[in-house]
Image (cartoon, one colour):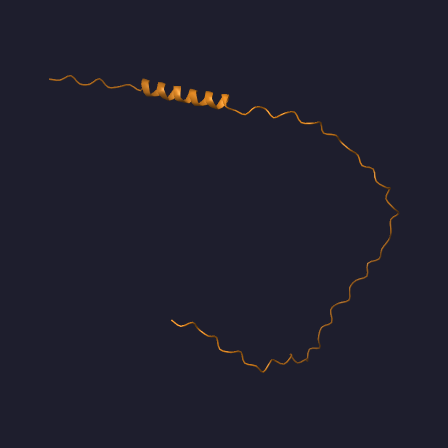
Length: 91
């Protein structure tokens, strides 16, 4: 009778996975871009304008309502031209 093969453990796959992850993390940390160069300082500027003029009181006049046509007005006449029949493309 043959002996059974010894079952393999998970130690080797876990070790390979850990080494792979450490290698990728190290590569990402070492390959990061250098810091940006120093920028010039930002200056705060207070622009002074002319003083405001005196307040004016302006009266707003309401707009007159639009003129409505009288209720018994006839609608405008339609054109006596009949539009041509639409032409359908051949099948």
